[in-house]
Image (cartoon, rainbow, N blue to C red; front, side, top):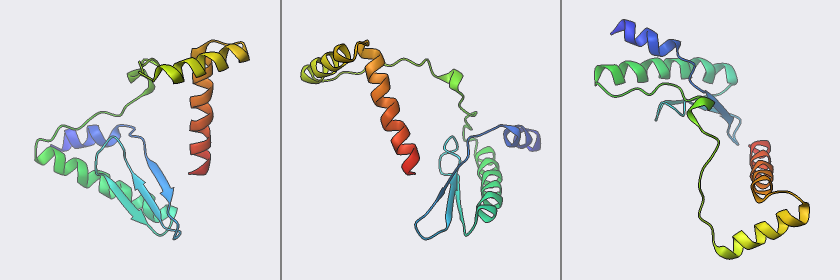
Length: 122
């Protein structure tokens, strides 16, 4: 089991740390569902999330729970289909035409703008 544990501990899982309103910190590994920790400082939460990750992996291995490998950008094609109301489709097409760009480019612009706004407010 130690070899498997070492293998998973060496993987580069994405770590997300956010500050709560009270000044404490919350950390999680999104790829490892339920693997999270809190701390009063960045140092505390960084240390405690490593312990939580080790405990999460040990528990998963002991209970034969599938452990996902970290996701990378290579796991995504960059393309997806989306069904929208005809009225919205028309409005987006009209706005894209007014800007002189394709509707795909216009939708990418709108999504990127909203995504950037969300990331800046977090």
